[in-house]
Image (tube, rainbow, N blue to C red):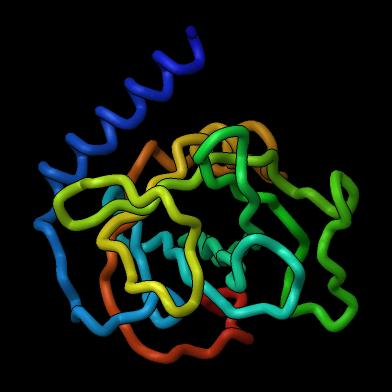
Length: 179
């Protein structure tokens, strides 16, 4: 119960930060999540983008987190127990020698985390992301702050934040950093 209460506090904080820091966005009703770019409400520099992949996972997308310092982290999606969508941290998926994890094996730079996609009205979408899906207005990864602070090398400080849809358009999936 303690973990659930912490999650509720995190979600409430994130909703409040969205309401205070940004307006509801609706870039275009035709924006697909694979073409979407999300930025952290807290700094406007940390980004999330999605790339199609050919691996046998629950989603046909990978998620790339691009930090303001140029570092990049990659994730695949997995179902949690119940209706939750989880992120599985992987190595750089643009690397020529990349192989997706098999079961619980493989490179895991960060711990697993829950992933939430929300509409502009802050309704939580229960379905995991697919490339054909419309881009949600917001993304929330409640465990990201702790994962970066305690598991990343070197440690990275990113306050608890929501990510808002900021633009839509085809982008270069080879881009793994800002440099």
